[in-house]
Image 1 (cartoon, rainbow, N blue to C red):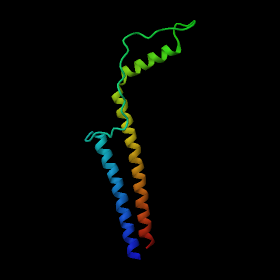
Image 2 (cartoon, rainbow, N blue to C red):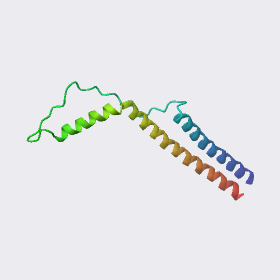
Image 3 (cartoon, rainbow, N blue to C red):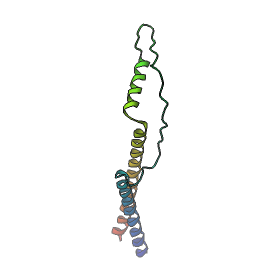
Image 4 (cartoon, rainbow, N blue to C red):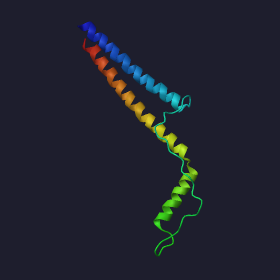
Length: 118
């Protein structure tokens, strides 16, 4: 029985460390651009409007809608949509890698606990 528990402990330890190393190595390759990021978010490029926004308002020539349209136009002119998608994909990969590292550490901890109890 001790041999089986020791074997299970080593297997859990090896699996946990392997998961941690895989997450770290994949993140290294991803952030050094050796492999592309997994595509989770895909932002379709919107067509640009061909005219100036319609400035209407009851008493005020500049309405809140006009300000929001102008801010959105300036933001999309300065930050392209593919950069936004890339940043979102990198953030989602980072969250997945953190979950994998946490899970791997829990498996390794369980394996160490089994090994030290024998």
